Length: 310
Image (cartoon, rainbow, N blue to C red; front, side, top):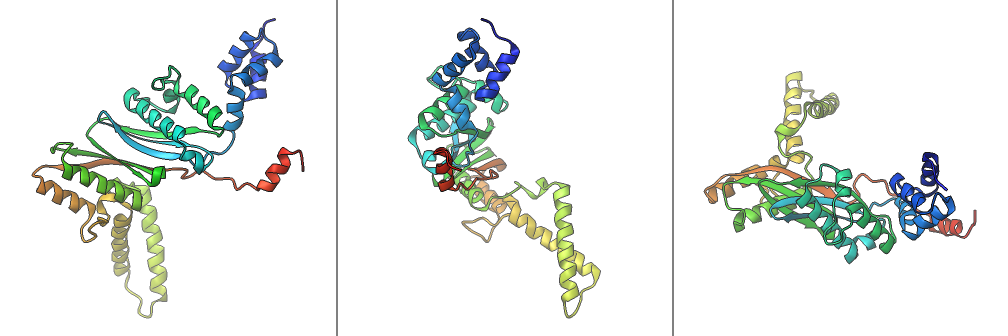
């Protein structure tokens, strides 16, 4: 008994499992649909796909350096409890190792790479963890820096992962340089800058901010006892643009450990102290679950549904 492309499509719709796995299941069961469903369940694929529909907004963000290559990755789970699970943490570290060594172009390519010491792909290892741990687990995003000096920082057991990329004439293992990198990473974790430098703020963002500030300034001026002339209003807005840079651009932010100087000034001071050059080239900050809408479950209703109630 053979099977058709329509059979593969129908099995996929029934189970939520990928086309290739459905095709293999039908081939293994000689086209018998019921046995193919059983086959997928036995392999754990159907169960994993069912869990894959559940929202995963917990988990961990993790930054590391592997053989000089900097990596930061976010892997999500459904509950904070699983995010602290040793097996989940080790899986996340393994994914970071794959990213560092294999340099995948994107998530799709990452899932095809071999997971360390298993012979399985990252996709297969993720499915295995779903089955063992019992929650939806999903690799969400990653970033990788192959060049320069990379400094990782992990905050609050995986709530935030930061990777800082420096270019310097100073040795990568210099204690003062490493401390600088850690300080900058902690600044990024705490202050969450949107840009590296004021020169990186795109014109559309800047014009929108200027437009908002102009409306605010004009409103304040209309309500003032002694309204200021238009040229003074323009100067006020430009002053507030400078404040925007100080709040949103890393290098223009006040350095948190010494707020009388900016991060840019502190980096220059350390470079002078070490008689070398230091440039902050880039950074990535991942906070677990940011931007994912969490569903607030009514547990009484959920239990009633499971028991067949209304």
